[in-house]
Length: 279
Ligand code: G4P
Image (tube, rainbow, N blue to C red; front, side, top):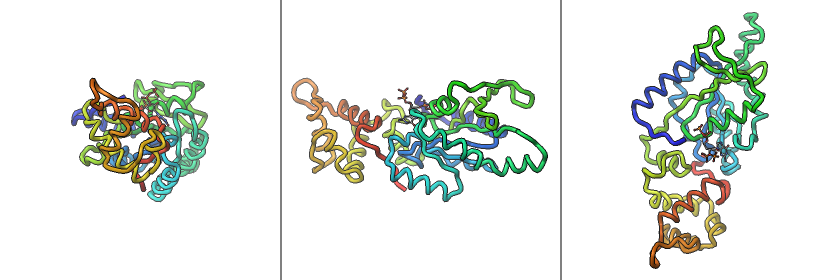
């Protein structure tokens, strides 16, 4: 899903989050492991104060494992619980169950002191569009989950997915908006495919990606396309165009098609596991 953001969208999404947050104990915030800062909106910290917090480094399968570890440590230092996951394959899902208990220890303890037994932990998933919220909910909840709704004390229409005896998940995720004020954020989100391609200059963006790749991941481009990594980024784009036979009528190179191939390869992991934002 690609959503473009306007002030109206943001206000509506924020109001919805504020409403839903009142019902829950734990926020499960998904970030894209390839761009862990750009795919966050720090407004969630204000919205979710007093709640237990778990950050999932999603799409960890596409990101550089050393950076995954570094980002995990980074967020843990800030007081978050963190788990690396691949929501598509389900890797990391098992670890989450234990971490949820750990993250909500205070609540469980408080309930116990007050004599409240077995009140489930209520959680909501939140994140910017395309970060993998629906995929995560489907994989994490699995097929065997039971949906519960319209229980007393629950806002009408809210559906809860019972994950096990102890945990319930709100079935609609909270949608956060990216922070577009910073141009770099926009560029990185565009690279990972979280902003509609058709409003962007993909050719220019591909030059950014080429420069980044040959600096931080030397060999990724030559390995995939059999080109030299010397020269200007335009030279490299030309090299990829020739290697992939991207020609228009006559001998003119088709840069737009070439950029498309490059981004396809990058986003699907065919250039290797790459993190665009380093700790
Ligand atoms: P959203 O609800 O937050 O908007 O995101 P959604 O689940 O729709 O996921 C967006 C895209 O990211 C989907 O790809 C999904 O398969 C992919 N994705 C989600 N989690 C992971 C992950 O951990 N690893 C990888 N590699 N991909 C992930 P798509 O191309 O839009 O759809 P599809 O062709 O995969 O169905």
